[in-house]
Image (tube, rainbow, N blue to C red; front, side, top):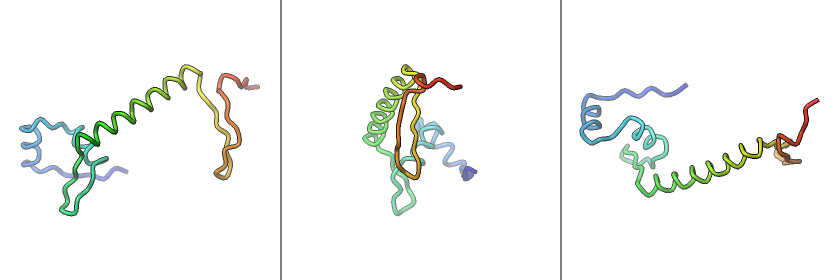
Length: 91
């Protein structure tokens, strides 16, 4: 279950004044770097890096969808085989 965080009126007012959305701050909280003083920093550089990772993942997902999916067979942490989902005909 997600941890509930309460917002102060000060936080709500400053967030709005500074053009920060709840979604933006949720990302900062989830992926930012916590500092010793209780602040969390999510830099533009970190955001750009995450965008690059997401774009790469999107490319792989599009290729996977175009191929019709994939199956990975593994057991006890060992990958045994892999094949395209469309290549296997279910009985």
